[in-house]
Amino acid sequence: MGSEGQTVILVGFMGAGKSVVGRLLARRLGLCFVETDDMIVAREGKSVPEIFAERGEAYFRALEAEALDLLAGKRGHVIATGGGFPCRDGVMERLKELGTVIWLDGDFERLYERAQRSGDRPMLAGRSREEVLALYRRREAYYAQAHARVDTTRVGVDAAVGQILRLLGERQRAVRASPEEGG
Ligand code: S3P
Image (cartoon, rainbow, N blue to C red; front, side, top):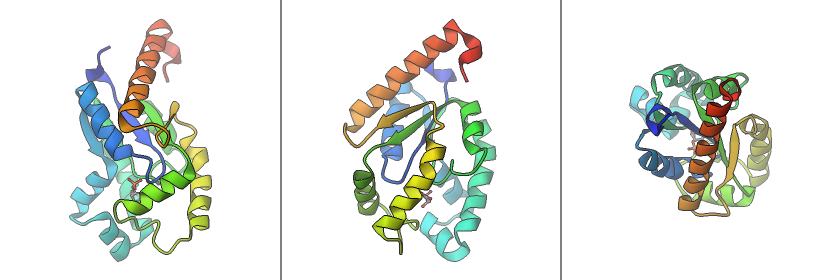
């Protein structure tokens, strides 16, 4: 199978580089790139911080559940999910049915620093470092269900994409050799 039939889903905490890695990965694979946050923003006609401020987190999570249903139509894409997107029971299983799920991770301190630096992130607002660390710890069990983990805090974007491309190649070879073990 060439890359045109593949779907790659990136999960991980805020600041892991899902957008920047995903965009470059999609370019290398010749696939389209989509972000679940952008699907939600397009549907609502509002930014993520506006949705949180006006409707609250529970409403945003309901929009994420809706976006999950729409991902079935995004085969042959690289999909970057929001940091909380896979952190409900059953979501990782569904993502793994769609394609290869890669957990972008690294040192918490670096993730936290990056997340604070770039973008307006409602999940950081009003939370101490300890509270954000506790959130990360709660989420790890979900992210860890991914097919593979790639550390993005010790290597640059190019190297992270290179690692993912190698992992995808290995998985494709494994699936070809033993189709029933591909999931
Ligand atoms: C969230 C992460 C954000 C965005 C929203 C909620 C979270 O995406 O979906 O602000 O719960 O961690 P990024 O992971 O791209 O920052």
